[in-house]
Amino acid sequence: MARAPKPTFITELPLVASLAQDAVMQGRFEAGRRLFNAVLGDALKALDLMRQSRQWQAARALHKGEPKSSERKARAAAFKACDERFGFSEYSLHALATGHKNAAAFADRLGAHETQKIASRVFAALQAYAFGKRGRPRFKGKHRPLHSLEGKSNAAGPRWHADTATVSWGKGFVMPVKMPGKTQDPYIHACLRAETKYCRITWRMQQGKRRWFVQLVQAGVAPAKYDFLASCQVVGLDIGPSTVAVVGDEAVALERFAPSVEQPWKQMRVLQRAQDRSRRAMNPDRFHADGTAKRGANKGWVRSSRYRVRQARLQDIERKLAEARKRDHGHLSNKILGLGNVMQTE
Image: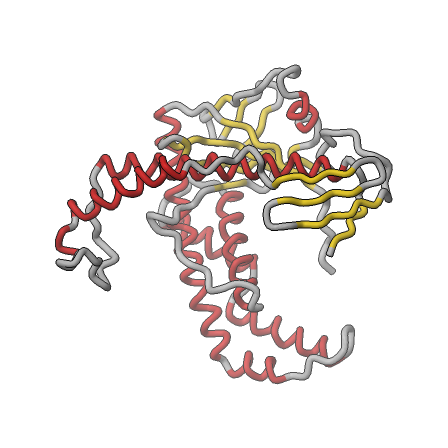
């Protein structure tokens, strides 16, 4: 019987990484990307072979039956036998990933915990694909890199040290954290009082530069930021295209979705037109005489350095808009929860 998941929450903090540390972490993430692709390729082959086998076809033809019935148990046992025969299990992928890591000499870049977590990520994606919940998993390439690596506990892999507010990742590799003061952000310090289960290192592009963050997976329930009313208070919601009407016992309001978000249409239009002119000037052989793009020419585009700078500016604009929407939606959710926790809507 599967264990019930225990409540957890995430506390994210920015890291201070030097140029040398940035290069080391990029090498580790590149090793993780290659390991992910190697494990995914072998696992997809095993899944395809298993689906083509007569044993799997016979298991599929068995009657499902009612829950907890003998027919359902026999069908599950038949599928489990197929998984064991073709090595389609999480622990089999752990051993496969360890073998690939040792063969590629990645021991100085990835530890045992990070390797097993990569294999678990592959297995979760393949399970969702096998049960028809998601599409076929894709390999990670240059434009779809690996964005996070994590351990299994705070005793190995990336480790959080609360006493020094630092994160270590291997011998002699220590990165300080940008820690706000207790008066600046008391919520962060309240979150850090909980036990840290494991750490996740992630990165995002901000203003054209790679920024590193640590996500602390904390045990328990996140502390409340606001004082809410007593439970079982009823709140009515009438959601429209851009507004929501809120009716509670204590207040009535008509709120806009993301009121602080103002789309910079003119700035984006100027950048996109400059991008189009640059793309046509650098790739004249990929367009017809009437200005339309040639079909099938999707690879090998030449992009100038200024094109890449403008592309980073466009991405940063979209990132800021997404963060502003998320922040405003959180504020609106807290306002509604301040009136009650029983929602009634159409």
